[in-house]
Image (tube, rainbow, N blue to C red; front, side, top):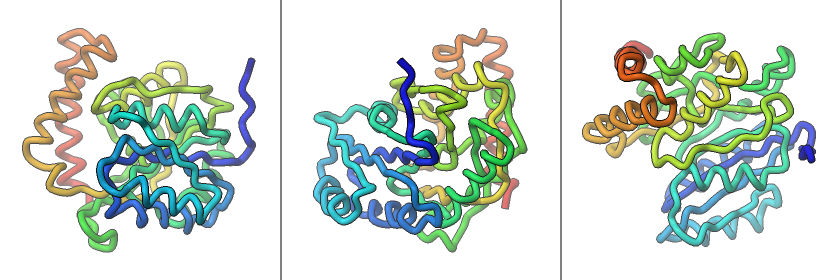
Length: 257
């Protein structure tokens, strides 16, 4: 039986864990959207702070906010899958609980997809630390990207993605602790030729101390593992796409302003 989705409803999936300090700001950026036909599914990954308490208050104030509380900490991939499973909308979008959206993000991205008949799109985005106005850099995106190109350049920011389930079909993320979003885009691109980029910054990605130094080395290892275990690439092919990935990551961090 084919599941029927609510036409033009955007289901926004937000995993969260111990984010009481930034949760309100992220949700406020959704509530400020010029496009109003959305639902927000916030999946709390068994937080140990007051995140759940804040979520319950926010849900009482806005009926579009739906809360899901996981009984144990399971990782962002599992949390996103729970949100996707309960989503009613034709369109799926993602925003983490410490990131932000431009007020016109949904309006412009939906228009972009409908005008061209795209099923999978992503946008440019700003990178910031504490305040969105104090941007470190802007990540620009290509007009389109295919499977092989994404292997070499993980340019798609999860906070910018929108997927039309009528075009792409239902999907889930692999239960990996890292890189589950990129692995998902790769899986989709095996069946659909391209994801399409809107080269206008419509989201704000927050970085902090946890994103630096040793964590970057760990992410390199996770990427290698994704190529070998998830994508089943040969050692030679993995070495090639991994070197391209590292080069593009350096360019993305240093070359774009």
